Length: 221
Ligand code: AMP
Image 1 (cartoon, rainbow, N blue to C red):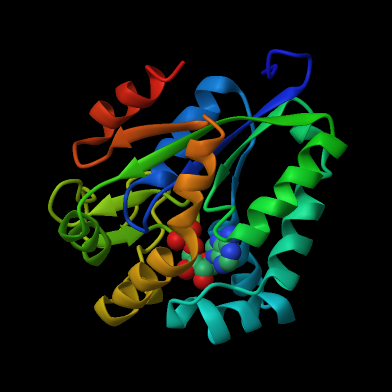
Image 2 (image 1 turned 90 degrees about the vertical axis):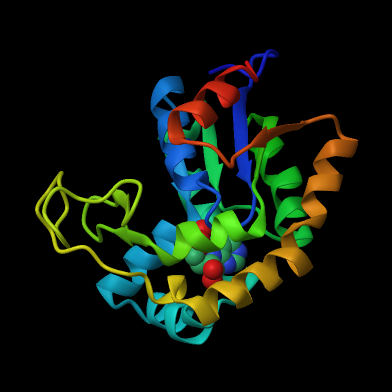
């Protein structure tokens, strides 16, 4: 994907936790043939492998609904975007989440011949995202997502795709969900205005089903 001026186009998926960024970013990245960089997935993988920064991130921050500090985040993202598969563009999911992370991208992308193409802002009322998160179950192996009511696995508690036991993410439990929503409002919501001012923002009503949201995103061009 070319950003229109010969540089690789970068897309950001922005929005509150539980709005469906992961699902839509995954669909979008496959359709565009671009790598999908989900910082939450990278952190969870590091925690599962038991690396010291991974364990620290999970225990000190993620399980409490707080953001992982920039010192860890920027190192992870910097290493990831240096890989060759990012030359043609990137789909970010869950990054940036703070003004300083957005500032980092402003410097890091042009340095790598990349340019910010569009910010897909997915929004839905709070009761919708809380309901989605509390009933979400995920596969720790292939990362498939389920919803106990709207999209249950065929066999209870087991991933349809790969047969792994599904988990209820620690941070999808109600108390942590409330904290994550607060952190989103305090730290991340201001990025909506930032990208709107740069005419990069495309708003998507994400209260409907997966296919409906996908079509709305596709219409963004
Ligand atoms: P997610 O899977 O995107 O909901 O992310 C899960 C958790 O990982 C978040 O609640 C944060 O604790 C952490 N995390 C993911 N991305 C970032 C980021 N860009 N900055 C700081 N923390 C992050």
